[in-house]
Image 1 (tube, rainbow, N blue to C red):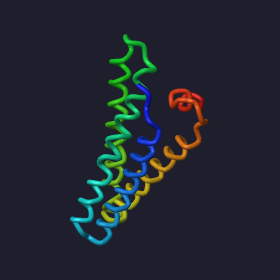
Image 2: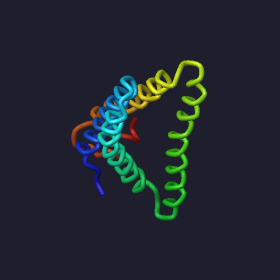
Image 3: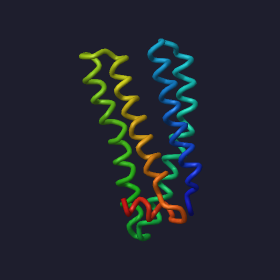
Length: 134
């Protein structure tokens, strides 16, 4: 199944914009704004998550797909948990709001970096060869 780059890019933009909204809610201590940010970033995260999964799974042979899927989920859990643990250690030193800012800015930088990488791909090439050649 071919991934639609436009949907992926919109997902990355939605994820980034949602995190910006969430950080604004944290700064102004408005739970409603934080929830709106979560609603905006949620579909973006979902489309990026499913899009990357649809991109990597066809690269594996049928007898390797279970291993690849396991590695994909382990990496995903580590990608969530390690920065959260780091933010937890950082929060007593710099404050919860500042720790949330660092965490959110990190998410935005990584999302924008991946958006730039998808925008760089050559016209006419599919995402599989674009990611492999990087």
